[in-house]
Structures are given as structure tokens and as C-alpha cells.
Length: 395
Ligand code: TYD
Image 1: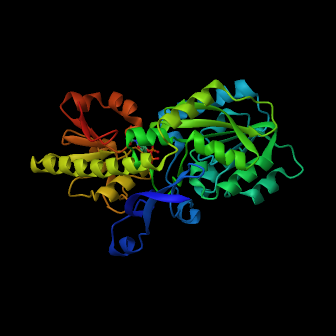
Image 2: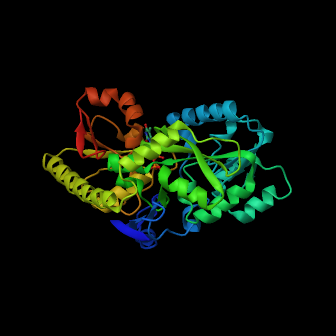
């Protein structure tokens, strides 16, 4: 049974950056109630009432995976690794974004699935691309009476699809006998340890654990056989899933991760109730710090117009009173305004300058990359603020 444990209040769509802040635009802004639940039967943590995907994945989808150096490198590495270990001949990616993963494979071996038409257009120039949502109907269209997929890859997408049963059934249909389904998504243990409640937003319908994925796979004639901890998105898990009767055996690492998750009590509601209390404290502490800095006339900006920041700004009620603007390297975010709180987004070139005293790390998942890049800012006395794993000024 689903049990609610976290209330993040009224939230807009995390990626619905506003083109302007006219009355008309603001009036049209869509809000929903963001609460999070734990299912004590299959250990799934999910947004209680997911938003209709058709509102989310449109032809204006802003996120471009290949804009980040970290992500480009990560996708290249995993493509090489999967190739070496499994030697797949037919490869499909669900949620192929701008092709950052599939471009590492031979053109004729790849099928791309991407419902955001602006992104699908990019990969369609080179790869067979279906600009559709993943479901059984599409799986039948692609694979009925055809050679099935040896590798189905999906990074930061499966956790976005509300209907897991439909998704997994379609996967089961599409896999070859010894084909593998590899997914990457932010891990529940990282969210709990980092207190990164901003990982919950409309797109992140689920924050998976190995315990939960194992249960879902089982229900759909599949099984989890291996797992890896990866650093992307502030701590993710890469799950290796195969058909029930295929040749793969369960790895030591999977046994270790399952044991770890049990030790962290990711199968108990009390864990999430405690998490919820820490989230409330994080909000209070952040507001307290921002108020203190504002009293000292400090200029605070936010670094990275992340979707995660949408949850944080709206939950903590942080707007232009605290944050002058957000800087972001993504060209199609620049000149826009953050969802719900309407903070202007500008380029780092324009905004990350001498006048900034404090920068809130909206893109905390790139902390290492950012701190390395912004040595000059730190050297001249600029400071970063983070809420992960608790509110602190980085020195
Ligand atoms: P992302 O990691 O995709 O987080 P989310 O899924 O929550 O949106 O977003 C990171 C954002 O930060 C992206 O818009 C690019 C931006 N960014 C910068 O502006 N500067 C940087 O140096 C880095 C690493 C990212």
C-alpha cells in the first residue's frame, strides 16, 4: 500500500522555464501538488499523483544531455563498456535525448526512442528514430516478427514513466533471448543520504532502489542480475536486467547492494518519515542563512538552472528577494525565468562576475566540475552554498 511521507507543496513543471513574466504567461502556469509516497509491498518510492507525460515531454523540452562534459564522457564510457562486455548487435535506447549515448555505436545497429520531437529531430538525421512514448504498442511495431534487441539502454528515463508495468512488459517483448536491459537512474540511497529532496519533481516519478527494481522485474518475467554504483546525478545506480531464463548469473555486487539497502532500511516507512523531518529542517536552515546574508547586503545568485532547483525554490519559497538571477550555460534556458518563482536566467558570462558574493549550487550534482572551473571566483572570496547533505557554505 502507498503511504505518503513527504509534502513538497504546490509545484510547477520543473522544466517549464517561462519566456517572459507577463501577467498572461504567469496566469497560464500549471501547478500540481507534489507529494511522495512509499509502497510497503514492493518498496517503490514515487510521486503520489504523477503529471500527465504529454504535458511534460513536448517539442520544447530544454534538457540537452550532450551539453555537459561530464555526461558526454560518462555516456561514451558506458557505451564502450557495454560493447566490450555484451557485444550487442542490435541496440535500442529509450529516451535518446540528443543522441549522446547512441552516437558511440554504428549507425545501422541503433534504434532511438524519444517522445520530445525537438530532440528526436536531432537523432533522426543519422539514426532510426521513433518520436514516440515507449509502450507495448510501439514495441510491437518495432519488433514483431523481427530480430529482437540485444541491448536496451535507458538513462534517466524509466523513472520518468508512470506506468511501470506497461514499460517492463514492452521491454520483455523486445529483448532477445540473452538480451540485456540496462537502466540508470538516481538512487534512493543517495537521495536519503544526501537529503537531496530536490530529486523529487514531476519528471522523477520514481526514485528507484535495487530492492524495488528487483521486485518490479520479477513481476514481469525479468530479473535483475548485476548493478553498479555510478556518480552521475548525485549518485545513481546502473541496473542490469535480463529475461528470467537467460544465461546471466547474479553478481556479488548485486548481493552487496541489496544488503546495503536493507542495512539503510530502504524497505521501511520509518526511514522516509525521518527523511521528511530532515527535509523540513533543510528548508528552515536555508531560509535562515539567506536572510542572514541579505541583511549583510550580500549578492546571492544560483548556479545552474536545474530542474531540481524548481522543487527547491518552490518548496522553500525562494524568489528574487534572495536570488538576483540564475546562471546557466544552456543557451535555450538563458533569457527565460525559473518555473513558479520567476527568477531570471542569464549566461554565466554575463552574470558570474565580480559582483557575486554567494552562489547557491543548483547544479550540486556537478560540484566537482564546477569547483574546478570556478577557482577564480573562490580565490577572490566568492563562496558557494549547498544544501547537500545539509545547508553549508563551501570554503
Ligand atoms: P542537470 O544536471 O541536468 O540537472 P537537472 O536534471 O536537475 O536539471 O542540470 C545541470 C544544469 O546546470 C544544466 O542546465 C547546465 C547547468 N550547468 C552550468 O550552467 N554550468 C556548469 O558548469 C555545469 C556543469 C552545469
